View 1 (cartoon, rainbow, N blue to C red):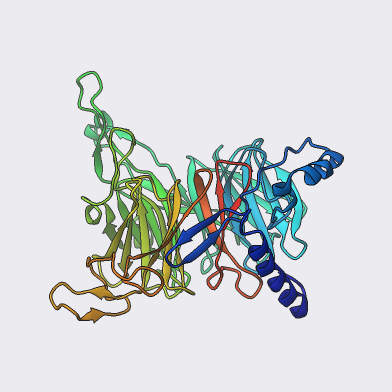
View 2 (spheres, rainbow, N blue to C red):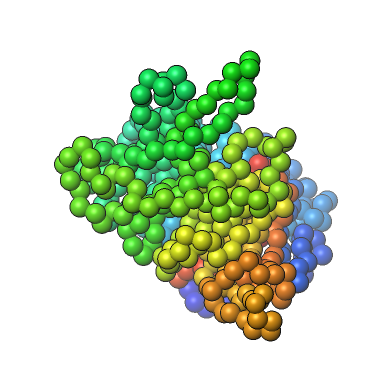
Amino acid sequence: ISKSKNSSKINCKYFIFLLTKYSAIMEIQERKSGKIYSLSSTTAIPEWLSERSRRNLAKRDSQYRHRVTLLQDLEMPVASTKVRQSPDGRFLIVGGTYSPRIRCYELSEMSMKFERYLDSEVVDLLILGEDYGKFAILGADRTVSFHAPYGNHATIRLPTFGRAMAYEKTTCDLLVVSSGKRISSGSMAAGQQATGEVYRFNLDEGRFSEPLAFPSALRQKKVVDGDDARVLQLGGSCIAVSPTHALTAIGAEDGTVRFWDNRVPVGHGPSDNHLSPFLNLDVASATSGYGFFDDATNSGFPGEVTSICFDSSGLHMCAGTRGGNVALYDMRSSKPLFIKEHQYGLPIHTVQFHAGSGTILSSDPKLVKIWNAKGSVTSSSSAGQRRDDWNGGFGDSTDSEGLGGAIGSIVANVEGTADFTHFITSGDSRDPSGQNSGLLLCTGEQSKVQSF
């Protein structure tokens, strides 16, 4: 990343030279489709180590002397939880612990720009402007803090704990998915109605709007003292807003994705239709029987939707579940085009479309799985014939691995040295979302932000 075109060409050639020279020192994962270089495989150096000791270490340790540093100080004291890149591609913001803090990096200078301490751990992080001038932080203490270049601008308090955030540009609303309330069978028998909520904070008016509400399915809890206790699970887990049209999708604990159309006019009555979802998509039933979820070692409902995303066209959607499955949908059908299984059976915390390669990136705590989304699928009814593009099905996805292979076929599995918590594809100012980039930045349960 550089300011001038000539120097950027030199930097690219120098980076290729580094990969060639230090490939024996760097951790390399061999795959059929190519090689995956770990750019953060060197051992972390303690912060209390003096500059003189660092210089002496560089003289004695060849691995430390030949290390490749993507960004200076791209790490946290203990662990990192979230990473976001600004829409203009110039800044990177990382949230981590301990103590809770965020760090902003200016990519043109290849170093940290500032650091701010927080009152609680970062649950979610969202950049509202083109650069680091406006961003919101969802805290673990039921707060949302808004930050400006000079520091914390304002803080609001939520009625319940938040889990994820999204910004809806057409209405200027900050949407916060809440954990919801759980009502016991006794309260339900008394006629009490329970609904989950998505809080809406209007950034133009500076006040809360009436929240989006949705009912939830009845789930069974474990038997306690011989009593068959039943509760209503009303929490949402994830949220995504389509980049093409004003469609908001909420993934909930009951395994259902609910959709709201923000183009519906806002009324003033108590039963406004725009506050209730106009469509419910049952992902739990579609993924039932798939995956490797183990009830003995894992807790929770395996069909719970834990991550969701839209592609750039708005016609396709991915939903990851707690049971380690990823369902690919065409928005014109309620049946999934393909269901991808993660063999670890752990919750999918991040899913993302990669338009440049026609793949989907899905991650659980152990790895980031890259698989084909637009490949061809072998039809079982007519041997030898192939259906191209998104006309998918549940055919044999093991054929023709690599880029351009069958839908669902593996391109690569990126494995780290610690559990992953979040990832993004990073680009430059010409490609801020990283849709034509091969650089992965992964936060996790270690001090360094892992990069591949």
